[in-house]
Length: 280
Image (cartoon, rainbow, N blue to C red; front, side):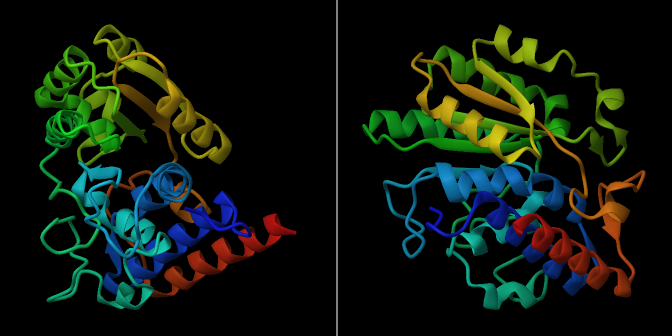
């Protein structure tokens, strides 16, 4: 959905900047995840997906399911960049009567397909959606965005088994592997490696990429969409929490962070300077 003069790098920068500005409204939030997943969202919304910004419920749209509902701040930023939500709503983030609650809810926000947050539920919903679209001969894709913490959940693997059984070639899953969850290191809380081999054993087409390498992510999305076999597709994305803001990247715990008031503008200024430098 990008325009001729705007690059994927521009889109990812805008998504990160929108997320920081929303975080500043509340002074806290899941900003580490938003900065880490911005490149994946830029590719999804500004390169891969088919949708109509002014008609978010258009039947022909690709569906994007935010299974990890606490990433909503990142998703709102992507919806703003895609033109589905107005940037004017940014200052309402997390406020009373806002369409942008801190956890994603489909009843509030245009473009939000499900109310996520109960981890492990998104994939099974995506399987049902993908089956429904196939029965209706609708060629749209279903994208399910999930976290590595959701690999702890039995429902995730039931969904993975069902998707492969039904040969859901219209289902693309992205897993944000940042190796952090509320209780600590994800792979220590519940060891999930070797994760690529696990998905392959369930019958999925598997790719693993640097989730902060825009071109690698773009190529992975293209391969997933074009894969000729009748099987679901998963892209395992290794990301860095706080990506693009060094003092946030270096924090030991980034799952839910509070940032001192002066630091929000410092973070935005650093992001601006880095993007301006890379654009020269």
